[in-house]
Length: 568
Image 1: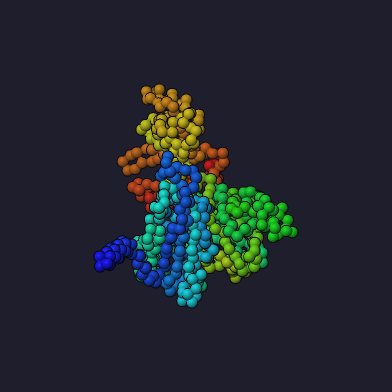
Image 2 (image 1 turned 120 degrees about the vertical axis):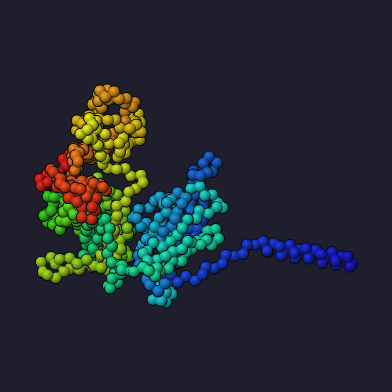
């Protein structure tokens, strides 16, 4: 009996010891984050699920997975967070399909590739209030962005977390984020004590920002179910221009365009209204009189002859064939504007409920690429009184969109330069495929072979007519040519820089511009950047030429009066 008791006690002791050992091996919970008295950001991964095609065996690195996550921004500070912007450092070739309560800051429409990270801006809630002024109401202090997309190669149980999250508003310092387990990270961003804020005016609106190009969306008249707005595009870059500009945006609340002055949709299309919810709500409306019901319309400028047309034109700065010049070249032609009549949908049918479109984009025929930020509410624009009185007329509400020139990694140049000199008989043409080559050229020409030297007169004819001259010149100079021959530069515009003379106290060069496109360029200009030689600039003949005021290494050239057209 005693032996039995001892054995039972021993088993109990062993069981207790085993239980204690198991408990000690359970990982301790992560410590709770320290209190944050600034802007608290969290990123929580919720779900990963494999989606077709099944590449787990053949190509696991490119196996697609659906992911769901939540980005939370909470204002724990003492000041409102105006026009919040948050960065998420995606790194797994993510394709973002949807994002609630936010848009991409660069104006890209979803779905979008965000594998190199992206910045979100708030919509429809752009500002986050404080706990003090809302009595701790988190619905006004906080926003949650539900993210759904596709990532590649991260198989469960691994978690596709971003590298970083941070607040992008000026005047904040964000340390490296802290991981909470495997599926959540957080960071507390605090105000920079050395930052001098100057972005909020006395009237409570955000100060207007500067950029290469700014777009102002001014609501000038408002009614219960519609409003009129003026859209103004202003160029501020000394070398930037737009030809045949095309402006686009996304309607976020099923709005549609009923009328316009000074501009026009590139497509007049009301089918989406007729067969959509707009047609169900506006049952008695004649949609044949409307202009466009696309969720993302594209607006173009009107031709010059419509400038004084009382029906379609008669808007200051309108009707210039889509040409916007640098202000240094002609301030009167650096702005373009048009009016737009917008119909709204419930629940926004009251005169004070005004929502600007999002995801703005602008492009031209032979122009740089622009990335546009979200519209930011600014002080109402003041317009000259239509009667000519000294008083001004205020807009009902105004938003500003700032666009800056950006060079996309995959973007090709849109013009090229060839070189020649008085001391060499041959011309160095533009590089092969300087402005890109189509995929189907490998059978007819080489996209990798270097361009061949040419006789000077060959520059005067299109590339497709140069082959005979190039071969004859190579034979004359005893040079070999590649087989197949190199592809052309495929540039719509090219320039030739020819060293004309060189002497002890200086040199001269001749610049020739070629337009190979089917359309002429009005008010052409060219710029030459020379870091070392520009300070010795004396004069330009046949063109107007000046040094740029803010760029002492750049010479700006444009056509003389009556010679401003680069003819097709």
